Length: 367
Image 1 (tube, rainbow, N blue to C red):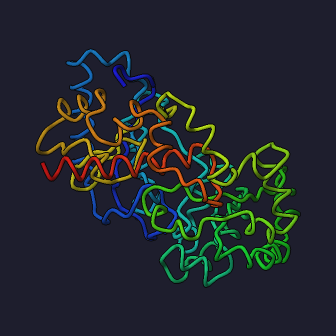
Image 2: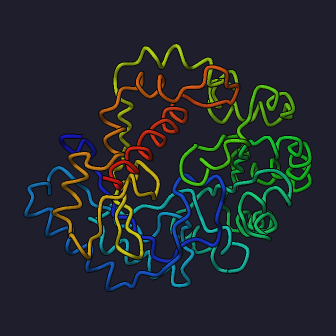
Image 3: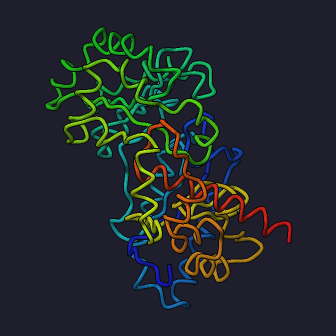
């Protein structure tokens, strides 16, 4: 990385954890814990002191504080935490996203209205198929019903529900039934009444974190053959493309010649650079999953001088792979020339990055 290339920097805290253990989660499956307000304040104070002492105050700004990096607003004191985010972030930098707690929408009568009052206009809701399949992938019984139930308070509050459908081999045969559910809920009509079109789209899992463990569910061209026309058309409309391949990708074997010729590193660099802080005060960059090969260190034991030095100088296997290992090397080592599994280019390279970094991490720990 050499120099931090993103100006906006977020400190994202896993204050309350997540009610789900989704099998498609790119972050992984860290334990639920709690971080106190005093701890959050102390970490932010230490970070700002490091900024001033390191000379990065002008490079990494504005600073944004977030009290979650998994399920937003899962903590019962979510209104107070939003006020804390605004207080600790640079002036005007605190931000909301089109993500809400589905768990809370299904249980907290005032939550949707609160979210609308602070400016939320749309909310993404994720499905994998019908009830049994969706609950299976979320690893929580009741997730599907919560997701359907959340639609009502969203619409009542004037927030547009946007449905994301994670495409898997297991769930693909159920997609027609899921379209029937959308029709029975009159989602197109009801969202249109809010002044917008209803959005629903297919996506595939990014093969890192928990999703790395469900590669046997990754769609193939045969999977696409059972996708209802409505979902295919809505997906193309959502992404602004003319074919599903442009948004979902193509078989791995078709990517191999192009990627074998790519001599540069993947070098993914998000628009907002972030440190994800766990309840144990372990720190991970937002370019990777919560896994040993991405871990930057522990703030309690090492502090920001050490953690940020590792961040800037790519001193973890994940960061090194991302910024220094040629894509061609990854393709040669891990590419499967006989694989019909469908990937977007970035997702496929991220899978190989994980494989390279995980192996390198193991070798480092054994030395």
